[in-house]
Image (cartoon, rainbow, N blue to C red; front, side, top):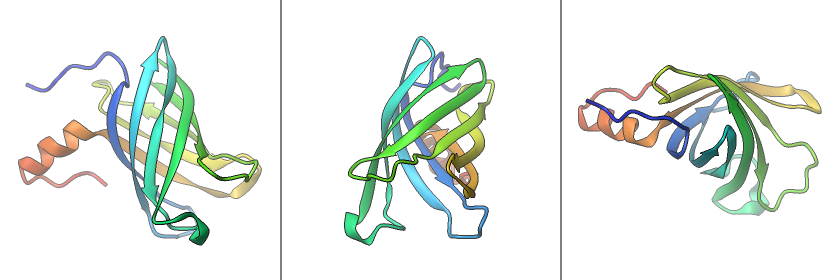
Length: 133
């Protein structure tokens, strides 16, 4: 049987898509949850800032209330003044989050995202099952 989780603390892998049709972007996250407060670090391939190197790093800050998850992603080294907000629903086993992301000041920049626990990804890969991205 798989591990039972009581918080979002741990390693996650995910992907976000753009409503405008740009290519999806994968990411990794290390999340810590304490009393419903979320914090953590995210890393993703650099797909939009030529001046920032191969990968982008970000911090996440947010909350979880039941199955509702919300966090703001703040990229390291950016001075953009508008950070993306992620809002999603957590499944019953605390192993997957599905939702939307958006820039509050730019309604045209938005899309969907999903995150799964990294251990779930490894287990599925070892079983040769397809990861649900």
